[in-house]
Length: 228
Image (cartoon, rainbow, N blue to C red; front, side, top):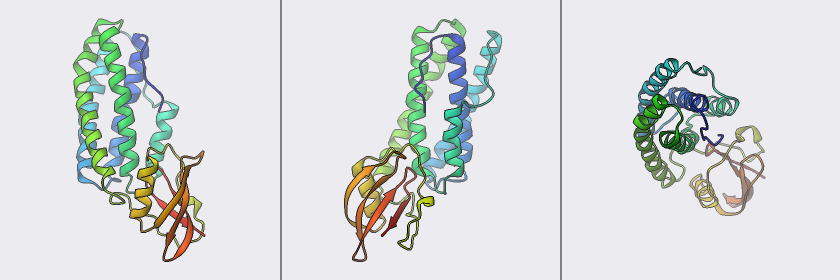
């Protein structure tokens, strides 16, 4: 996702509208593709809160004769497509995107609430930023809990030890090396070593299962695939 910082009223409206739409669209999609109930509850809250904020932004921007984009930008659409095309459950991917989205939203709204050039939009930013901070705190707690559960939210992809590159989904991978190792071990592998993230965001390394040494991969969704 692109970093957000607003320089003008129209710039703020563009970025706030796109970010808000992404929150609603991704959360509507997540309702049917995540497994953890707390994440479903969070997604429902995003639909409600960001839906209300989007409506308010439309009204304020309209009063200020500013245009509100109706579609996502290319990067947010690509992120949404990753969720749409990802194999359920998509808990890790959705949580990761929500963490990034709320970091960006809080910065955007804090900056405009402090330095905004349009009084009406500045008031809107000031009234909204605390809710965004609450969302960020909630998703960080969910993420911390998810990180402590190895392999519980996204089951490993079943393989027959033959290469299955199609099962690994390229994309921005937020797993640290330690988390990647833990996920792979949670899928039943031992002696996990030589982990390195490739240019597609996939962690690759060596591991042992059933006495056999295998090449293993972990994508941003938490899918684990092995090959000889």
